[in-house]
Structure formats: structure tokens, C-alpha cells
Amino acid sequence: MSDTITTFAPGRVEILGNHTDYNLGFVLSAAIHLGVTIEASRLSKDILEISSETNQRSISIELSNLRPLTEDAWANYPIGVIKVLLAAGFRLGGMRLDVSSDLPLGAGLSSSAALEVATVMAAKALFDLEIARMPLAQLCQKAENEFVGVHSGLLDQASSVFGKYHELILLDFLNVTVETVSLPANASLLLLNSGVPHELTGGEYNERRKQCMLAAKSIGVASLRDAALAQLESAHLDEVTRRRALHIIGENDRVLQGVQALRSNRLQRFGELMLASHFSSQVNFENSTSYLDILVELARKTPGVFGSRLTGGGFGGSTVSLIESVCADEIVQRISRDYHRMTGANCSPILTEPSEGARILA
Ligand code: GLA
Image (cartoon, rainbow, N blue to C red; front, side, top):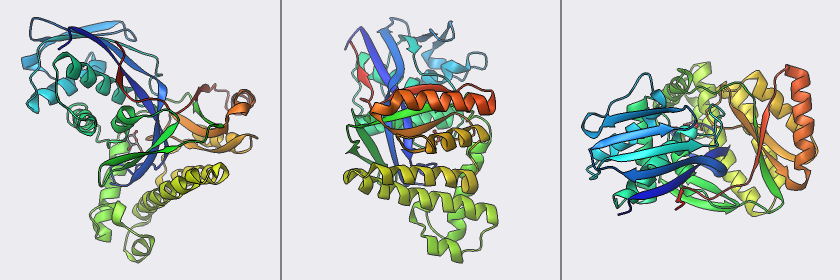
């Protein structure tokens, strides 16, 4: 058992496979180099103290009375995971968590999952808990679903845990397995925050989830993972539900095709799949915004960009583009300038590479 420990959990970017995680499908994602750092220490009393450098706030709560806070809602992610750990039978004592982050909030890069994962990593190290990596991610997801109330899938937490340098993470949410696929050395990831905050606590995410469940039920499959295009065409779905299901079926297929493209070093082909994914978000899943559409369209026309799409839940947040690394500066300059000219808004770029997952720093 350590008395003090520093943990780091990265944000993530979803590269192909949109809203497929809770439909038990496939996703290609990556951890990024930015994330949440927690300096953690054990306390002699059974309390949880948390401070946030970002918010300049701190809270203290008894382990026997963990509950969601309304005023300090930012603390609900760490409180939630500690509560879930205790409920799962892990033995914990009091602890202090000093949280800092270099991940932009609301950019759709999973700062909340990073906070959850960094918290469990800290508790695990401080109290010698035996938790393997996938169950660790699942505990975090459970906290987010039950404590925070967003019915998100496992993508964000699993990506933060399983990140690997210059490898994309291939997640299969039916079998709950993970493998990695190398990203060729000449390629980088460019994230562009549209500046329109992404809000998952808004009802759209949970609504999309319900529509997907309804589609699976009407088609007669356990999840949309098992649905084929032919079944969709013969099922009697209303127009909106049909398009939601079409998006998921298409995304699963694009992930598998994307893996083939990467393995044979066909980045141009991979880029086409990203553009097709974005188009499907626009017309089928309706989780894009005009700002994200403009960013993708500008990227599509820029030399050195293989492909581009919205990343994560949608309804705001960021796009991800796969780019030729040597062209990065010109690409950023050109898209930023044209985006400002067309929208009056500023986008903020993050140039990154697939990075290592959650770890102990000291
Ligand atoms: C958010 C959720 C994830 C996933 C994506 C969409 O990031 O937290 O679980 O559903 O949206 O793919």
C-alpha cells in the first residue's frame, strides 16, 4: 500500500464507430496525450476529500454517506466511482484527491471518463485493490450510468484504460475484448474543437440510445450488432428509427473495413470511411451540427488530410481528422482561417498521436 500516489488517465478520441458501443458493436479509438492527473493520499478518517484545480473548488464527504452533489456536480464522477467500488465490496479507507487536467472541457474528448479512471487508479494503488483493466473500465461506466445518469457505453473508459502509443484501439463490445492496430508512422490525428460545447447530459444521447434499442427489438435481434442491412430493409420501422439503425449497421461495417485498410497501409481508404461515417451522422443519426459539418468539409478539401468526421457523442464538440504529419501546420492554419471566415467562430486545434493509456506517474 502506498501513502501517496500520482495517477494519470488520458482523454480519448473515437476514430470510427459512432454510437456503436452501447449497441454492442465495434469501435476504433485512441487515447490522446492530454488527460487528468490526480495526486492522491490516504487519510486516517473515513472521508473523501477532492479538490479541483480547474474549478478552484474542493469538497469533503463521508465514505458512509456518498451521494451526488448539486452545487459541486464536477465531483460526482470521483464520488460515483468510489461509491461503486465500495458497493462492489472493495475495502477502502479515507483519501484525498487533488485533481488537475489539461483536457479541454466540453470538447467531446471524455474528460469525465478520464477523471473516473484516474480516480479508480488512485484508489487501486492506495489500497492495493485487485482489479483487472476491463473490469476497472466497467466500474467507471457503471458509476457514470448510475450515479451521474448518462447512459453512455464503455467506449470512453475503455479507451482511456487501453491506450497504446501509435496504435488504434479496436474494441468489440459484444465480446468485451480489445486489440490494437498500428497507425502508420507518417499519420497524426488533428482534433478541432468547434467551440460549440458538447453536452451529453442533454436528452439527445439517451434518446438516440432508446431509438437504437427500439430498432433492434423491431428487427428481432438482441442488439443492432446482430442486424444485417437486408433485415433492416424488410423490417417495418418508421423512417427515423430506420435511419438510426442504418447508421449503426454502417458504422460497424466501416470499423471492420477500416481495420483492413490500416493493416494494408491504405490511409486514403481509411479517410474515405471517416468521411462516410460523418455523412451518416449528418443524415442518418442526426447528431452533427452545422459547425462540425463545416469543419469536416474544410478538412476534406485540404491537401494532406486523409479523412475527417465528428468524434464522440456529437451535438457539438470536436472533429477528428487523420492527416499526413508533415502537413500539420499548414492544415491547421488553413482550416482555422477558413472556419473563422465562414462562421465568425474560432476552432481550437489539438495535434496528437495515439498515446499510452492510464498509468501511475509516481
Ligand atoms: C459518448 C459516450 C460513449 C459513446 C460515444 C458515441 O462519448 O460516452 O459511450 O457512445 O458517445 O460513440
